[in-house]
Length: 478
Ligand code: ADP
Image (tube, rainbow, N blue to C red; front, side):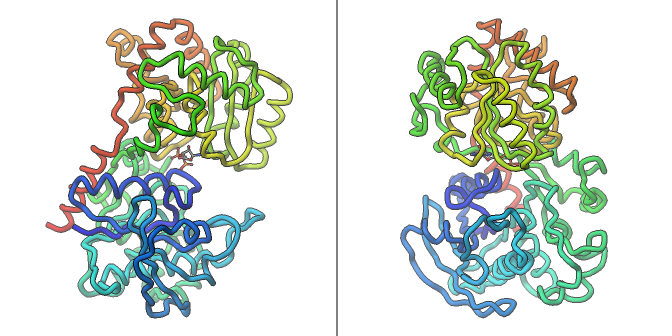
């Protein structure tokens, strides 16, 4: 079976969040299921610079007035179809934002072209290869399913995976015709979304199957609280909506071989792990104290992640004698808030503002506990990395966070199966209580070590999820 995966990010070439990790790791896992995946991504400068062996340049007919070619290349084990269109993708800045943090003004065209090319390849537009399935990721690829629907005629099966419903890909409805959508698409039964054109809605409405990245989030988004306006449509899609948990790349994230670490370590290698803690404490300007409970955070700084609550809980964390190390970037107010907290509590609160892949690995290897107080979380990857690296996840019980951590409640502790700490809802009182409960658990070293072992032995691999995606694809072919 052949699958065309379409996405705006793919690790390790271009990444702003978990989407890239998933798009980068799933193809190798699906290979074990007998499925061949080719990944279509825009030719941003970072992608063009990372191309390995280039097999072919294929000219395509112009799309929405843009001259294009697809470069077939290998990179980091991925079979890539890179959409080369310098006018749309060859520019400095990020995949979605310019250097000043503003959306690129032509994002509608940039991602409509990506989706249109995906639809065309889906129908055999790349001579010699016709995928059985077009698998779109997030709003940037959402129009692919709509184009295939409105084109009519024979088409591959279509899947959209929603990594975060909070990004609807909304644009002015007047753009529809310029993007090659028919007039009838601008209705509630098409791509219209409360007066806008939503590229995510296009995918949710027209893909044969809609998946999201955990069973918990798949259930939550059917209700208005987490449905972000899409819950009615999702309920109407019924059994077409599924939750398939993300895995992690267990080679990239392997504490025993991780070249980013001060000292790699294996299960039970607590002395080696402690050296990572000391190194990180030094790097984050914290007191190098092996006994201080070190909380870590690796996160985008946004309202979703609940880190404003953590700023308010800093006094509680300090009262417990704990330390905090944060690695993150995003909302300027949060960045400043953590900088101020670090300045006010030298040696106890550290923060590194920015994106740093190496330090993200070091944080997992060094932290005693990894805090994820998200208000909502489709899956969450950092708590999965934490499990594998023996950092105890302390998470809000939402979405995938609830699905992946076994709370250290009395029953789980008695049964010896706990892997972390959950708190019922991301509110300040419950976060405070969770910090205090974590500190109590940390003082009981044998119980803590037991949890670390459980965490590190948790299967966070792509094996199970890949089987679930393979079954979904087969369902569409049947
Ligand atoms: P989201 O996709 O909502 O940002 P996830 O937990 O699914 O959240 O994925 C976040 C990914 O981004 C993880 O791989 C995490 O390690 C990484 N990450 C987040 N912030 C940073 C940062 N400042 N530096 C390096 N990696 C980061």
